[in-house]
Amino acid sequence: MNGNVTVNQSKPYRALKSTSLSALIVENIEQRIMSGDLKTGERLPPERELAELYSVSRTAVREAMRALMEKGLVEILVGRGTFVVDSTSKVLRNSLSLVLRVEQKNRIANIVEIREMLEPEIAARAAQKALPEHIAKMEAAIVRMDESIDDIDAFIVADQEFHQALAEATQNELIPTLIGPFMDLLQEQRWRVGLAVGGTARGQEHHKRIFRMVVDKDPEGAFQSMKMHLKQVRDDIGSLSQDDEYGLLQK
Image (cartoon, rainbow, N blue to C red; front, top):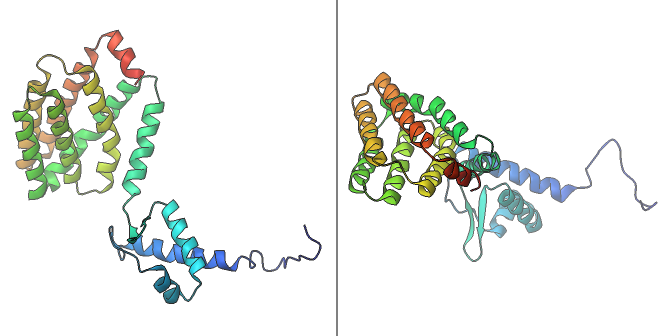
């Protein structure tokens, strides 16, 4: 350390004034985003205006914007400005997907087991809380599955949309985020190995039964119908050959 530099021990970190100011800007904007005052897609004021609003230098504003971008709260588009983004669900979803992909031992069985723990209750909650727009999404997915019964790729996409709509129908914003990675991996899994003979038609009957229970606002019926559907999923996966299982785990 240069001998001419002194540190006031009674006031630690006070020398980092500009950094402290940028941190305060970050804290303020982060709180406004979390409270809903700043909404996804909203454009923040230009750098010069923010500097005036906060009575700080433009350097402090730039540091704050970089920190917010690193946190995944804003996106800086050259020539357009800085926009609030909804990255919470994306970050969590990507993190869960990474964990699931890294875990190789018993990965498939573990994913199915977690679905068996979560999805019957999700179906029950959907039967209690589904709004007309959720019902419409589920019905549209079922129609697409009917039309794609012999097109495995299209069927699986619509299958995933149905389960995602169920999750959204719980009206708990965290549920779709939590269930998404499992749906993603199940989708990849089925694309790789295909469904058992007659699996799409069999799965579609379960989907329609679950849908009827949701429309009828029958939580117990939805719970049991989802259990039956997941048993079918488990049976389909259990029908894979050892070679298929090995190939799936190497994915």
